[in-house]
Structure formats: structure tokens, C-alpha cells
Length: 165
Image (cartoon, rainbow, N blue to C red; front, side, top):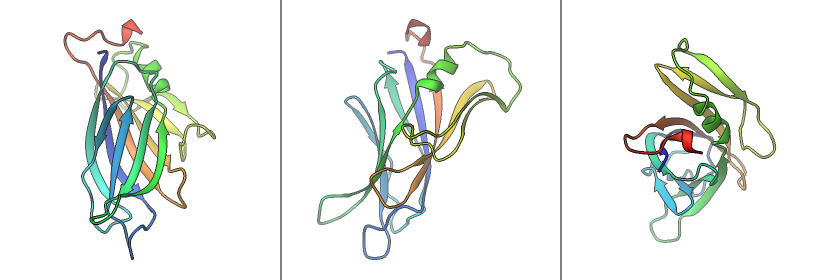
């Protein structure tokens, strides 16, 4: 293991309606065989989760996939959109070994493209001795919806660290 990637699933915006008047959304994050999910927010198309999902990272080249579902009681949960999370630029900034930068210093800015699911520019920032990245993701395969997340790296004593990739 190289370390831990903490993904804070902040909130959903204008998510699709999948029940009569609203939806009961939750988020599932997958990377390889790992799968983690947030709690369900009932009857809300603009949910605030503020939920930290932590993935042990062994191979940073594996894709990270986010899917939003609508919780259903008597049938299979409905898909409400999905997005790929490109962690490669974030990992590249972590590997720079930067230290003692001013708070709020932008290390790198990533522009939206057809392949990265970003809704708008995403900055990788130095804050309080850590490197974080906030992202607004446009959900694919759905009529509407966005999800805001934040990436944060957690060093684990005894792990290889990013210097070994």
C-alpha cells in the first residue's frame, strides 16, 4: 500500500428525480475491487453528505469511479449518473515533495475536458501543510446533476509512500 486517498463527498446539486417528486440519493465510489458508499439522504435532489470515504491506494493508475444511486425500498436502486475521478494530476503534485508553501497557494489548475468529467476548473491547493483538490463533477448518462468532492492524501506509517511509483 502507498497510502490512503480520502475522498470527501460534499454534496449533490440538481440531481435527477427518480421517485415521484424527489430522490433518495447516495454515492458509491469504486476503485478496482474496492467499493465504498455514503449514507442515504431522503427526499432531496440537492443533498449534503460531507462524508469521508477512504481508499487504500496500491495502484494509483486504477480508475476511480463515482456513481449516484436513488435508494428504493421495493425494487433495485436507480442509477442517477456517474463520473470518473482523474486522480493522476493530484498524485503528480503530491510526488513533487513540496513543503512550506503559503496557505491557499495553487499548485496546479486542471481545465475541464471531454474526458475528465470536470464541470469547471479544478485547483490543486496547498492548505495547512496538506495538498487538496476540490472538484465539481458533471454526472454522465443522466439528464442533470453534479457532485462536489475533495481529494486529500493521508500518509500511513510503514507504507511505501508515493516515492515508490
